[in-house]
Length: 262
Image (cartoon, rainbow, N blue to C red; front, side, top):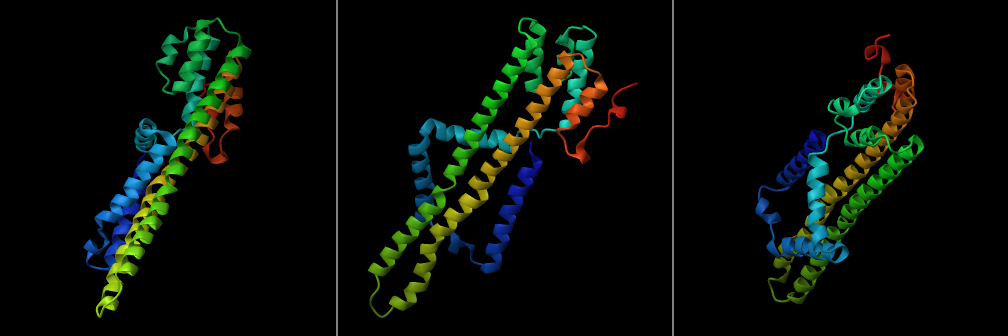
């Protein structure tokens, strides 16, 4: 599970709750059924129009899978797994056993193609590049769809506020009109609050998280492709580590002395 994302999500909820409690002791004042219906129902309807209903449901599956259950890429560990395959390939061993010791699906795919022994090196690299590009494209599309959904709650919040204002102004009149105006205005603004919270605490942060993880996965796969290129040339393990370290920040780079016996 992505604990950092979950922790951040919990923090945002706690901050919102404390902010509401500091504003008033009567939290019921922030509860309004018509406002909830307009914001959530309107967002659902607009999203269903944009992406079709079945894809709307898929978006929430993507949210759960990639936001809370996706594993963070640890690049030094990926380099170590490339070295495992490189050592087996250099010795002429079958990659079947070596594949059992690696966890990265993209590297496993590359090993499977190499193990088949049918496709030439240049074509293998081309295939892996194409797969990496397509994976990145699909993941970015998913993230952008969720970002698009994030535009709807504030819009429907404003629609709900406008509806409330029309009803409020239509009922003005009489001696008690001024006394009723304050509470009625508060109810009108609740839809704006709901829309802003839903957009800025859920959809937009999730989409940015997915975009960031997609970029991270793209670089991880690029590292693997470079590693596959080197291991198929049966390059020196030290050279493999140093070249793959070029994809990492200086503080993240793997010290080959700790993993390679000279």
